[in-house]
Amino acid sequence: MSTNSFPKIVISGSGVWTPSNVITNEELVASYNEYAAKFNSDHAAQIAEGKMAEKPFSSERFIEKSSGIKARYVYAKEGILDIERMRPKFPERSEDELSNQAEIAVYAAKEAMAAAGKTASDIDAIIVSCAYTQRAYPAIAIEVQHALGIENGFGFDMQVACSAATFGLHRAYDALVSGSAKCVLAINPELVTPQVNYCDRDTHFIFGDVSTAIIMERQETCTSPNSYEILSTKALTRFSNNIRSNFGHMSRATDAEPYAWDKLFHQSGRKVFEEVSPVAAGLINDHLASLGLTPKNVKRFWLHQANINMNKMVIKQLLGEDVKDEDTPIILDRYANTASAGSIIAFHLHNSDLKKDDIGVICSFGAGYSVGSLVLRKR
Ligand code: CO8
Image 1 (cartoon, helix red, strand yellow):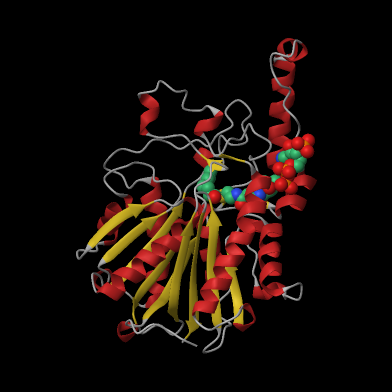
Image 2 (image 1 turned 45 degrees about the vertical axis):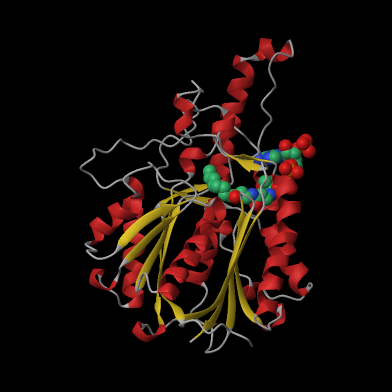
């Protein structure tokens, strides 16, 4: 196997914070269908005149069959199931309080730091990388740095939708290789439910909230009993409007309605499914080939968790039919799509049984389009 001659960089700890609130498909569909029935009744005249479209009903059977999702964890359950509101409700915090996203970032960060045996004084870079940050500045990463008592180095935020976590890990890797940091805390506080359109049956079931974190450092400082050498990183982007949200700071200047459908998450799910799966499989294949490896050399694929059928298709394109479930762990049945955090949850929950020298691949794919992978070897 060919590896580069750069210093060896390792993942030495991971953490996941899971919200205590759960919404099952049954609860979500019951609430949406009640909302849709009321909408149709309230707008019966306009619908009859063809001036407004009737709201179609949602179905638990459809959701589980077409996505694999059975439930999702949410930061705040209040509001989402209220048919007069149809969005989560967070009490506003003062500027003196820790922001919601920094709070959940800190939970996951502490778990990852404990797993890697690191304290605040060991860390000198914090990357908060996720689909949305709750404000533009000051960076959530700098707030987390402060909250954790990390006095050295720097922090910054970045966004690459569903590939934010892997692209964040790529930046951590680059900083460690170049020597601009010695120990990086990369966090993905995915607080996405505020951007879900709970009035839209095509997308109301897709997302859940979570926070994940990884500690990355040079091999020589690693004392963790469970660590992975990063053999290589690879990323690819291709522009597409098929997954989009138009919410942003410009909305105020355009007088746009902040809750309009196009300001929330929307997608052409079928097109995404068909277009992204082969690109993800191709990137993984090329990445492994660049290291003299094939998919058959990989013990575990920790894939992005958007859709179970999509993951099966990617694996089929890589390996054919013959794959055991434990080789490609699925967590979206419980967590749903957690934007960029899905592959990191899968890694965190399903890596401790790997043996020395086993090869694993973390791969994300989603909006942008963006695809990112890391090839790992157990130490
Ligand atoms: N109940 C009943 N029927 C439904 C429902 C529902 N809830 N939803 C849709 N249908 C209907 C459709 O309207 C359609 O009806 P018709 O045939 O009459 O038009 C029919 O079911 C079939 O619809 P689809 O063809 O769309 O169904 P699919 O089998 O393709 O499944 C999925 C839809 C599950 C959305 C699937 O296409 C999918 O998962 N695609 C992959 C999408 C993906 O990976 N997207 C990535 C997004 S995540 C990302 O990049 C991060 C973004 C940032 C995070 C944002 C957080 C808010």
